[in-house]
Image (tube, rainbow, N blue to C red; front, side):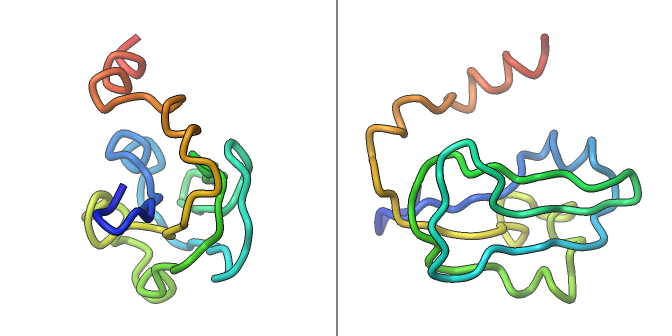
Length: 110
């Protein structure tokens, strides 16, 4: 979550590492509505294509156009320049269902 109330969506470091070198990203369009747990973007790597699921429902307010020419930004800086899209939440209570970073780390360890 950003200070202005928008959510920035991307891949975790673990997810980008398991994909390998990202070669293409199919982005949603600004203005699209996405539903929590629905496919909203596709990331392609040498290993194959992977859907990116929206963590929460809302409207897409921005997409990372840099990824059109530099999809490798996801591998190089997944928590910075490698973000995929931003959205405004339609139901803030969905945030309560997301894992904390610590819980996510425990889940992927097992």
